[in-house]
Image (cartoon, rainbow, N blue to C red):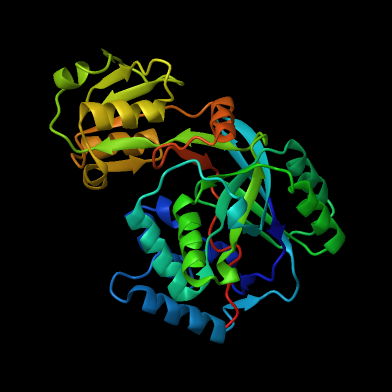
Length: 369
């Protein structure tokens, strides 16, 4: 895996006011609240429905002219330390933001062409990598190296997200130490955790333009062995007139009162546990339930399948009648994901939810004007 230091563009205003969760995790309420700040990164990552990418490009030019964002004067690697609580246990996770060569990155999920095209439009119109792709490497020594460097550096930013995650940001300028980090990753395998559509968009732009700017994409990199790396499942929200009786004909459903860790469930107002046999839960959901039982093809999925990242969100979407039922999948076992990534298997779209996410807006990578 090849990475490079770079001169990022950074905000020259209160960082806590301008960062945002990744664009594809936002709901309408979050988007509305973030847009109340005229300098929030969402004004670039999610173009206004009326002005589109032209409006976002105009905003970017204004920010540059007004010194809202400025280019850092040294080549650096950004170190991010995240502190958070999960299941009442406190964790810390270490990672870096750098440039990564798109040819060295292995995807593990399929993509939707429509989503790739939308990201291509934003990236090409603004000549920018606005949000880092989230990558994991199979090198246990990497995060220990980063952890050692943090104690020698001064904080540049510290801010807390509404979710309770504290982010502490450091800039590593020492060329010798940067080289050590680069060399530590040379033989590491690298898999996309989050950002498959952005990766494919960058590859498409490179194929289209042969511009080396797109060859090295903005990336957040952490180790698969870091205890602070959590891998959740992505719940499916489904519009269908299928009945429990018809679904029971192609899978085993049992009435249930509670949701237990490690099991899959169907919720339609009532809760049923699903026997996924020996299959990976998300593969059972897509291959058996959606494709076999419901006989949905690619276009059907675009129209009739939504996604939720927590159980309460999935249930509320069914209770509010936005969807007819939800398939609730468990968190991933780390060893299962490592096995799949080593085998370079391709999972269905939106199979994994790595968290905590890296906020957008910590740094931006712009093509020189």
